[in-house]
Length: 162
Image 1 (cartoon, one colour):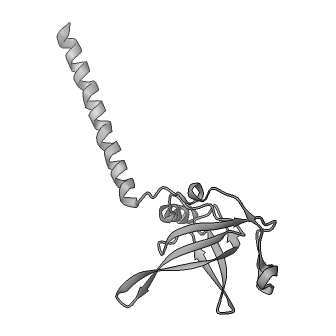
Image 2 (cartoon, rainbow, N blue to C red):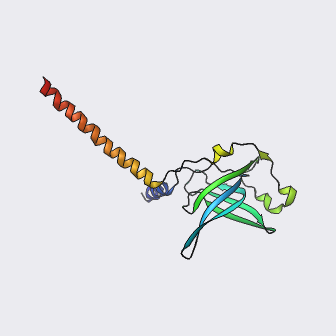
Image 3 (cartoon, rainbow, N blue to C red):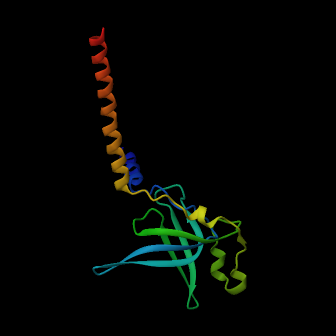
Protein backbone atom coordinates (compact mmCIF):
# COMPACT_ATOMS: atom_id res chain seq x y z
CA UNK A 1 0.00 0.00 0.00
CA UNK A 2 2.77 2.45 0.84
CA UNK A 3 4.45 1.66 -2.50
CA UNK A 4 1.27 2.67 -4.34
CA UNK A 5 1.09 5.90 -2.35
CA UNK A 6 4.71 6.75 -3.18
CA UNK A 7 4.05 5.99 -6.85
CA UNK A 8 0.94 8.20 -6.85
CA UNK A 9 2.78 11.13 -5.27
CA UNK A 10 5.63 10.67 -7.75
CA UNK A 11 3.23 10.79 -10.69
CA UNK A 12 1.72 14.04 -9.38
CA UNK A 13 5.17 15.67 -9.24
CA UNK A 14 6.14 14.48 -12.72
CA UNK A 15 6.21 17.03 -15.53
CA UNK A 16 3.87 16.25 -18.42
CA UNK A 17 6.41 16.79 -21.17
CA UNK A 18 10.20 16.65 -21.02
CA UNK A 19 12.73 17.03 -23.82
CA UNK A 20 14.19 13.73 -25.07
CA UNK A 21 17.76 14.14 -23.78
CA UNK A 22 20.38 11.54 -24.71
CA UNK A 23 24.02 10.95 -23.86
CA UNK A 24 26.29 13.00 -26.08
CA UNK A 25 23.85 15.90 -26.44
CA UNK A 26 25.10 19.40 -25.77
CA UNK A 27 22.38 21.02 -23.69
CA UNK A 28 21.52 24.33 -22.08
CA UNK A 29 19.82 23.79 -18.72
CA UNK A 30 17.89 26.76 -17.32
CA UNK A 31 17.78 26.41 -13.53
CA UNK A 32 16.09 28.63 -10.93
CA UNK A 33 18.50 29.91 -8.28
CA UNK A 34 17.22 31.48 -5.06
CA UNK A 35 19.52 33.98 -3.34
CA UNK A 36 18.09 35.58 -0.19
CA UNK A 37 14.78 37.04 -1.38
CA UNK A 38 15.68 37.16 -5.09
CA UNK A 39 15.14 34.50 -7.71
CA UNK A 40 17.02 34.27 -11.00
CA UNK A 41 17.60 31.81 -13.82
CA UNK A 42 21.08 30.42 -14.35
CA UNK A 43 22.06 28.66 -17.57
CA UNK A 44 24.48 25.72 -17.51
CA UNK A 45 25.67 24.54 -20.92
CA UNK A 46 27.62 21.33 -21.43
CA UNK A 47 27.68 17.76 -22.70
CA UNK A 48 25.34 15.14 -21.24
CA UNK A 49 27.62 12.35 -20.04
CA UNK A 50 25.00 10.29 -18.25
CA UNK A 51 21.22 9.70 -18.33
CA UNK A 52 19.65 7.82 -15.41
CA UNK A 53 16.14 6.32 -15.07
CA UNK A 54 14.78 8.09 -18.15
CA UNK A 55 11.17 6.88 -17.77
CA UNK A 56 10.94 7.50 -14.02
CA UNK A 57 9.89 10.61 -12.12
CA UNK A 58 13.42 10.55 -10.66
CA UNK A 59 15.02 10.87 -14.13
CA UNK A 60 18.41 12.56 -13.93
CA UNK A 61 21.06 13.83 -16.35
CA UNK A 62 24.69 14.63 -15.61
CA UNK A 63 26.08 17.54 -17.61
CA UNK A 64 29.80 18.30 -17.92
CA UNK A 65 31.57 21.43 -19.09
CA UNK A 66 35.07 22.86 -18.80
CA UNK A 67 35.11 26.27 -17.10
CA UNK A 68 38.43 28.14 -16.78
CA UNK A 69 40.33 24.93 -17.48
CA UNK A 70 38.53 23.01 -14.73
CA UNK A 71 35.98 20.28 -15.48
CA UNK A 72 32.62 20.94 -13.82
CA UNK A 73 29.78 18.40 -13.62
CA UNK A 74 26.25 19.02 -12.44
CA UNK A 75 23.36 16.59 -12.06
CA UNK A 76 19.84 17.78 -12.79
CA UNK A 77 16.56 16.04 -11.98
CA UNK A 78 14.47 16.41 -15.13
CA UNK A 79 11.17 16.68 -13.27
CA UNK A 80 12.42 19.12 -10.63
CA UNK A 81 10.45 22.38 -10.38
CA UNK A 82 13.80 24.20 -10.20
CA UNK A 83 14.68 23.09 -13.75
CA UNK A 84 12.76 25.50 -15.95
CA UNK A 85 13.84 24.43 -19.40
CA UNK A 86 16.30 22.15 -21.18
CA UNK A 87 17.39 23.07 -24.71
CA UNK A 88 19.30 20.68 -26.93
CA UNK A 89 21.95 22.70 -28.76
CA UNK A 90 23.79 19.88 -30.53
CA UNK A 91 23.33 16.14 -30.87
CA UNK A 92 26.32 13.80 -31.23
CA UNK A 93 26.77 10.20 -32.28
CA UNK A 94 27.82 8.08 -29.30
CA UNK A 95 27.80 4.34 -28.71
CA UNK A 96 27.58 4.38 -24.93
CA UNK A 97 25.11 5.58 -22.34
CA UNK A 98 27.78 6.68 -19.85
CA UNK A 99 30.45 8.92 -21.35
CA UNK A 100 32.66 9.03 -18.27
CA UNK A 101 35.75 8.56 -20.43
CA UNK A 102 35.41 12.26 -21.39
CA UNK A 103 36.67 13.15 -17.89
CA UNK A 104 40.20 12.03 -18.82
CA UNK A 105 40.18 13.79 -22.20
CA UNK A 106 40.64 17.40 -23.17
CA UNK A 107 40.96 19.36 -26.39
CA UNK A 108 40.58 17.56 -29.70
CA UNK A 109 40.40 14.09 -28.15
CA UNK A 110 37.26 15.13 -26.25
CA UNK A 111 35.37 16.02 -29.43
CA UNK A 112 32.23 14.14 -30.39
CA UNK A 113 31.00 13.74 -33.96
CA UNK A 114 27.85 15.79 -34.57
CA UNK A 115 24.64 14.43 -36.08
CA UNK A 116 22.06 16.42 -38.02
CA UNK A 117 18.74 16.77 -36.22
CA UNK A 118 15.69 19.01 -36.30
CA UNK A 119 16.49 21.36 -33.42
CA UNK A 120 13.09 23.05 -33.42
CA UNK A 121 11.11 19.80 -33.37
CA UNK A 122 13.22 18.32 -30.57
CA UNK A 123 13.06 21.40 -28.34
CA UNK A 124 9.33 22.11 -28.81
CA UNK A 125 7.71 20.70 -25.71
CA UNK A 126 4.09 21.62 -25.01
CA UNK A 127 3.96 23.49 -21.74
CA UNK A 128 1.04 22.25 -19.69
CA UNK A 129 0.68 23.69 -16.23
CA UNK A 130 -1.05 22.13 -13.26
CA UNK A 131 -3.61 24.95 -13.32
CA UNK A 132 -4.52 24.11 -16.91
CA UNK A 133 -5.04 20.47 -15.91
CA UNK A 134 -7.35 21.45 -13.05
CA UNK A 135 -9.35 23.73 -15.33
CA UNK A 136 -9.70 20.96 -17.93
CA UNK A 137 -10.97 18.54 -15.25
CA UNK A 138 -13.47 21.10 -13.95
CA UNK A 139 -14.74 21.77 -17.47
CA UNK A 140 -15.13 18.02 -18.07
CA UNK A 141 -17.11 17.65 -14.84
CA UNK A 142 -19.34 20.58 -15.77
CA UNK A 143 -20.03 19.14 -19.23
CA UNK A 144 -21.06 15.69 -17.98
CA UNK A 145 -24.02 16.83 -15.83
CA UNK A 146 -25.14 19.17 -18.62
CA UNK A 147 -25.40 16.23 -21.04
CA UNK A 148 -27.31 14.18 -18.48
CA UNK A 149 -29.80 16.99 -17.87
CA UNK A 150 -30.53 17.32 -21.61
CA UNK A 151 -31.25 13.57 -21.81
CA UNK A 152 -33.66 13.87 -18.87
CA UNK A 153 -35.48 16.74 -20.54
CA UNK A 154 -35.82 14.71 -23.77
CA UNK A 155 -37.27 11.78 -21.80
CA UNK A 156 -39.64 14.14 -20.02
CA UNK A 157 -40.81 15.66 -23.33
CA UNK A 158 -41.52 12.34 -25.08
CA UNK A 159 -44.39 11.19 -22.79
CA UNK A 160 -45.99 14.64 -23.05
CA UNK A 161 -45.91 14.46 -26.84
CA UNK A 162 -47.78 11.09 -26.90
